[in-house]
Length: 378
Ligand SMILES: [Zn+2]
Image 1 (tube, rainbow, N blue to C red):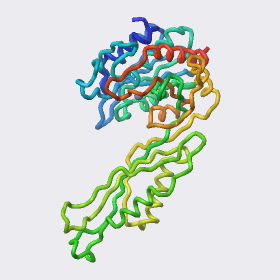
Image 2 (tube, protein in one colour):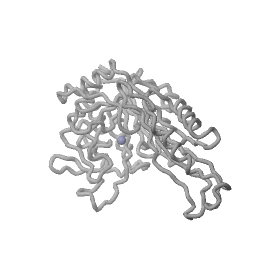
Image 3 (cartoon, rainbow, N blue to C red):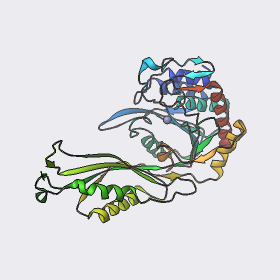
Image 4 (tube, rainbow, N blue to C red):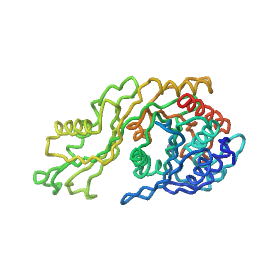
């Protein structure tokens, strides 16, 4: 296989059945391609109780702080196999499109990264940070791989992450940050009793309306130059015994907040607890925040963002919009080590049946990555 050919590499990667958290041969394939290109390759596996072991790959060429290509080789499950026109692990090309799970999210982009470094044997220092745990719990993946690399003295100048950022066409969007995510369960306390003797009970559902209003009515902020306003959505309410003659003892509601860089998880926890306390009284509720909230971050426009935008514009004729929307990504871990920008393929079919990518886009993305690599490393 010619590592300079992103289509051949993407086909081979798609044929590895690496449904998260399985390695499926995908990282072994990357090692076999990168080692002959002068990369020192390490493949640490990380573990933690109650989560699956995950294979990861770190590869480096050259000395000094490295320009990093980051991504993942795991994919989401294919779903109903009968609904795929081509098999999810077929990697076949039909009418100029490469089919298979991971074509856009994100084996296709990983293949473009490999092809870019293969075409520029002189470009260094450069590294690959590849996990098999992006579509899973994200515990034994990029965050641990970064710690592992830092512990070995690895340093990074900047990072390009290949998540599918473009909504319609290559060149639409580069992501320069991501919103944070925080979830919690609120329990409204009451006292169970007979519905015909309400004075002997305390119905927690009477506090449901005020609780919903306290959480959702007042905006959390007005947004910033680079972020939408932060947003809280209640996503579940549970209470009741099923009987019409029983006042329930408690009610719970679940919510999630997607927040911008005006907040941290801690500042939001304090703000929301305070709003509930003012609406309900401090002792009428309990709030349990879920572990491992995602932090918001922004890679401020500047030299590195320009470098990526220039590379995209040179190959597509369009300067990408710089946004921070969508869900979380592994960029939330990388941002603590170096500036990170996300640019990848067109995301329209990601996680869907018949995931596929235009073959022509693989060549264009390879050239974009090549330009960024040369601009960053010389
Ligand atoms: Zn992805």
